[in-house]
Length: 341
Ligand code: PHE
Image 1 (cartoon, rainbow, N blue to C red):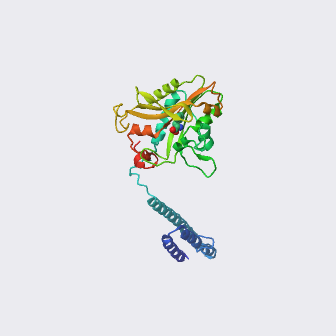
Image 2 (cartoon, rainbow, N blue to C red; image 1 turned 180 degrees about the vertical axis):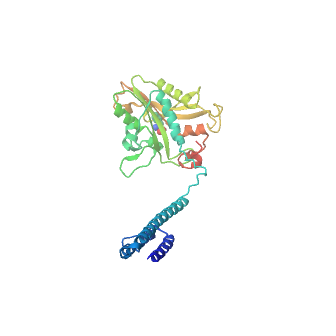
Image 3 (cartoon, rainbow, N blue to C red; image 1 turned 90 degrees about the vertical axis):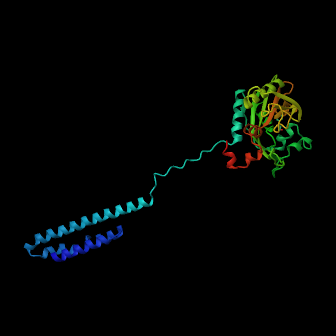
């Protein structure tokens, strides 16, 4: 019996060494140590041995069982360590590589310019009022004193939707009507920023979409001097102290009188250059006193209330300040351009 036991142990040890995964180990465990395994019959045989042989045989049997159990555990550990080492090698991270900096986004030049404009007007008490990009013909034109077939519509040709009378706003002026109808009869001091759209030939100087900032002040005793003061303050805060302004007579159906607001050219200081087309002046805004018809459409009695309004581009001043020569860069989504701001 002892020889057979030794032989079994040698065989079991050899087999264990070639078991290479946990499933093989489990099978081995059943085959040798399990209830019906190869060792079990030896325990039964003990009883049939002569009394004097039993202690040695019993001792040996227990030793073999312990040795095999210990060998199994050792093998299990070794396999586990191997698996761990393999997975660590497979998922290795080279911590000595320099990190990749996350690329930080930045503000679009139009957004940055808009925010500067908000800050300047906020200091003068103007709140931002949001009006929709998609407008009705009624608010974009008619309530602004531009009836159908009015020749002024040529200047503001736009994109029409498939819904009758619904279009993309051509200017931020329709927001005047919305603000007045919301605030009436309270006094108003708002700016209305937003995207505008026009059906136009796209060139270096004109896009089919662009930002505008509208301004509107309505109250009692508001006069053109208020408009002039606000424009002058804006120009010197935006473009530098001591700017010279001029009002030039113009026409808009929704203001009376109407003006173009010019400022001395920031590039040549009024001498005349390519940017100001040798006039010495840069146009910064259309403006005027809110037309009585428009006041009434907004709910205000023009006998009691008056107001001024202005509307200016955002990309134009951004171009001036950054020396950008083509307005199409703003919405071309070219990172080489946008990354410079
Ligand atoms: N809405 C005019 C435009 O787009 C600008 C303007 C606004 C003029 C307000 C006067 C008053 O050209």
